[in-house]
Amino acid sequence: MRSRTAWTCLVIAATLVSACVEVVVEDTTTSSAPEATTTTEATATSTTSAPTTTTTAGTTTTVAASTTTTGSGGLPGEPIEFGPAAGDTVAVVGVAHDDVLNLRAVPGANQDILEGIPPLADSLTARGNTRQLANSFWIEVDYADTQGWVNLRYIAYLGDTDDITAAIVEQLGETPIEETMEELGMLVAESVAGNPSADIVMSVAPTIGPIAEVTFDITGFEDDSVRGGRFHVFGQAGDDGFTLEAVEATPFCARGVDDGACV
Image (tube, rainbow, N blue to C red; front, top):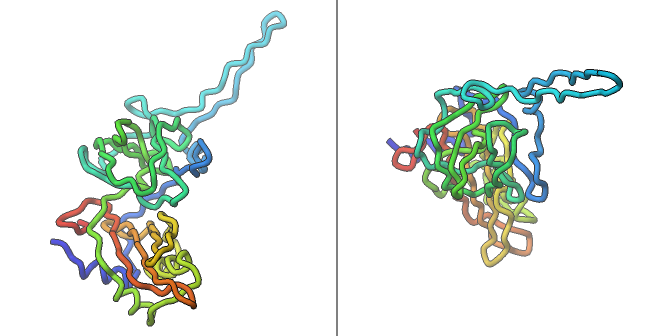
């Protein structure tokens, strides 16, 4: 059964009981750079032995050290019954507007990049395969006719979008006004996140017009159903800055969606 009330209460309370916390590392790449910005996982998932040197009659031959540890099936990590089922449609979440999510040839943040997936992509098709590495989970997906692997931290099901303006104004105690749309959006996002460990990124940069807009993604909710949400903030420009007009919220669902609500 869907529950609009549950999602609204989530926004107001911003306090969730921890049930399942994924331990992962980032795998996003700034659009101007071809490589991943985080290499922590390379150490956690690779075994490197020292090179060996053989000298024969004045000739020195160096044998390169092995840098990749593979699990069953010839892929890094181990298969695990976890994550989206084969055929499920999932979306990219928690990636900044000037960044991309790397689609990699095999699981791991140090593997070859096949594509850069935009931060609002919402039509990835899961293939039902998940690999667990030392610090992360990776799922196999199809995107734009390319098959590859993405970090599960940046993947979720999207629930239905609701207007939560009244709940935000009630929580803040007044209709907020900020000098810029970015500041207004961040104020809304921080009021929802509550938990300082939650990750907040601007997934759509501000656009200024008769009604200004900006979008923030929040991930890292300590819940096994709702992982976070996307908050589309509208503002009205005035002499004192931008006054909040509306907030639309789309929940990020971890396990799936039933009638538009997280299950």
